[in-house]
Amino acid sequence: MVPRDERTQQALTYVRHQATKSLADLRVLLERTAADCGRCLGGISEEQARFQPGDEWSINEVLDHLIYATARQITERICNLAVRRPPRRFTADDSSGRAMQTIEKRRQALARLLDEVVVIVSALPHPSLGPLNLKELIAYHRLHVMDHVQQIEKIKAEPGYPRVRATQAS
Image (cartoon, rainbow, N blue to C red; front, side, top):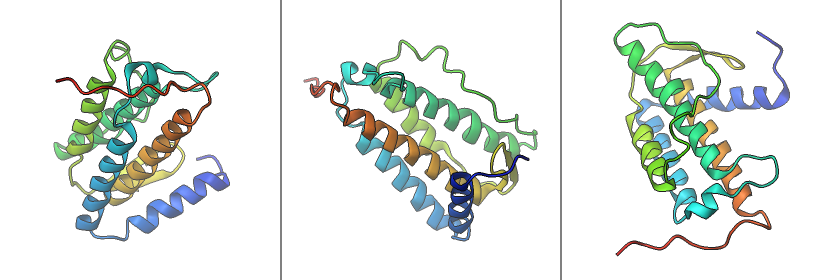
């Protein structure tokens, strides 16, 4: 494994601290993560979701990444372990097929995935953090999602971000 930079070491320290909590407490942490993410995404219009500040990701691209990472890197890995199938290695995103989805479909897909995280104890290798047991993986998931929630909030604060709010369908 490569030497860890300061940010990676801080992340690992947070993950390990959170992993000392009970599974019940970690479930509350996951529920809070899903709620925080939902609040951040609430009311975003299609125009806002497509807004891309410079060379940075749009909200749609951030959601594509979160959907992929949650499905492939978290939920799928845990389900594979449940049936004693070795998990696949962490890989780069493959968001093909979601490019034409609406923001609401992406929100629903992410909410579904956040609800699917199940409880199984095992060690899962992460490319920069090293092996993570289930509790550490749950804590890492919170850290990863919240990092992208902050990224979305930053996009929403950009000067050119469309200020139009999505309207509720009657």
